[in-house]
Figure 1 (cartoon, one colour):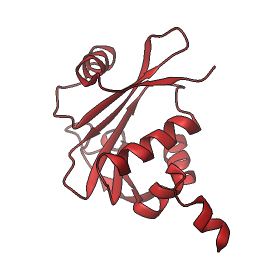
Figure 2 (figure 1 turned 180 degrees about the vertical axis):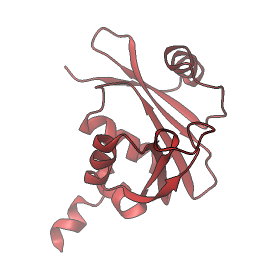
Figure 3 (figure 1 turned 90 degrees about the vertical axis):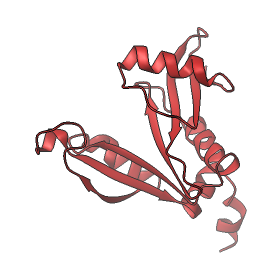
Figure 4 (figure 1 turned 30 degrees about the vertical axis):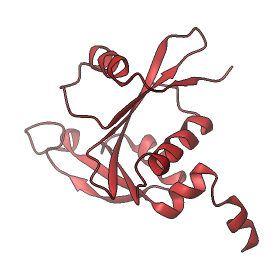
Length: 150
């Protein structure tokens, strides 16, 4: 059975993420929960730093990402934020995730040194990835007919 989404409970989802992953409190534009088959929260999709063009994406929940969740993320980025780009940052050491994000349409935009800590080293370097509007629309399933016609 697939995971479901919990929409409209930003406060509860935010608290779950903060408690489960010991995050520093930050302003979020939207928090969406990922619900497991037993009805409990198993993941969270966080949108932050929206500036009318770009929105930052954070995802928490090991082994909970699916094609349906990815499509939902893309649809929310378009429907709620009208985003021209979605940005994500991950550890430079997380080669598998960087590869996976590139496989679904993200592009590496650059490295951010000292992103995860004060010491300038590989462990603390973040890699910023971005997905642009055409790829977001394709992920959301909005460009399927246009791509087939080409």
